[in-house]
Length: 264
Image (tube, rainbow, N blue to C red; front, side):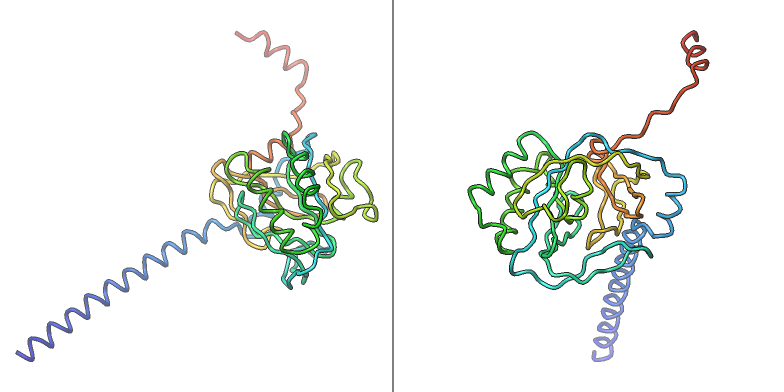
């Protein structure tokens, strides 16, 4: 009886061990599959060798300078330098961009909230700040402002698209004020200068660790990886990319065009 009980217990233990190993194996397979969607730096650099050039459209970016707030926390924020990307130690406010699932870090010293223009967006933003003049003075106030933007201003298709930048970027926009003249709460709407970038398309689910604190993820329609002349590289969702950029039309030899028009 005792021997049979021991054999039965050992058999049960073996079954549990096999099930556990099988479960762990499945988890590893899932991790490998998820990991394979994360673009490597070498893959990105290789893709840019044959990427197409695109130029900004007249789509405006709404910018809300929000620096100088109290209550920021120490964190890291990816930045770009002569030798490529590096992690900068900053004091700021962390928030997420629902559009691509990436963490944003609004810098306390020169941070700016930015999003694409759309019907009524600038007016809603200015109206909120007028009703809540102290909201940008503290990290709690800034967070409530960003939450308002996500829920009421930039949520047209169910996924709000709002991210961070800085006063240096804003000063480089067309007709924007100089860095010294940019003030907190001063809402502006500007277009990018017609400087070409390179871009290539990636499929839904592709992950890219660009300037955001966490990997950006391509939405259901896919996305474009964009690199400017300074080497700054980021992911832009396809829908937003096609509003903000355009690929120059290929010039066609008039003789070929004429020949094509006579084709049956």
